Amino acid sequence: MLSGGPREAGHGLAEEAQNAGIAERYALAVFELAQEQKVVEIVSRDLSTLRALLAESADLMRLVRAPIFSRREQQRGLDAILVKIGADPLTARFVLLLAGKRRLYLLPEAIRAYDKLVAKQRGEVDAEVASARTLNEPERAALTQALKSRLGREPRLHAHVDPTLLGGLVVKIGSRMIDSSLRTKLNGLRLAMKGR
Image 1 (cartoon, rainbow, N blue to C red):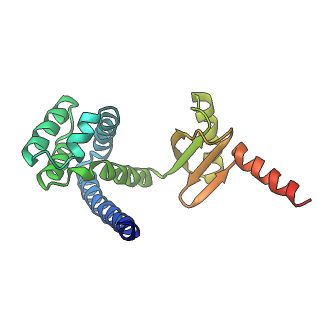
Image 2 (cartoon, rainbow, N blue to C red):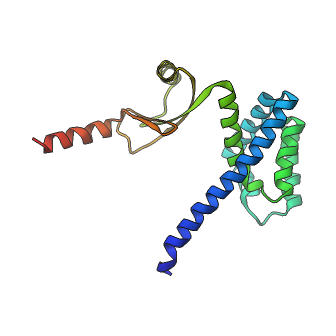
């Protein structure tokens, strides 16, 4: 049993990468159709609403992710939600296509991929922000302005709380990381004191 661990972990990562690639292809297809139909922002709004619903409803996430539900059950459930939120026909076709192809589990990743395409079109850049506590609106605004002046592009903040941070922030933009956390500063000070 122990000997199968690393192989299983590696297999899981390969499967995740493959799923991400499939989700990105679906997202690109719906993005190109949205551009043709001039509904990029409308589809973006619909998908953001779906993302929020998935985040707040464990039952909806189970319907999307669990293979125990039939294709028909997934389509009926999602169709009702799409009607309720007043989704654009393109959004509805996209989501129901995923359900019809038994790939509804890719929806969260496809939404992320679509968001990245929209951000790129707008000239925005994603910024992952970890902080010791939830940032208030003035702090978010100040951080957005500081990143905008540093990057020359509009940042889209994706903030979350990291309880392991004592204070400060860790900002990741693509492969770049800006670490102004108190924990990192204390570790640096500790190393400097050991070197004396």
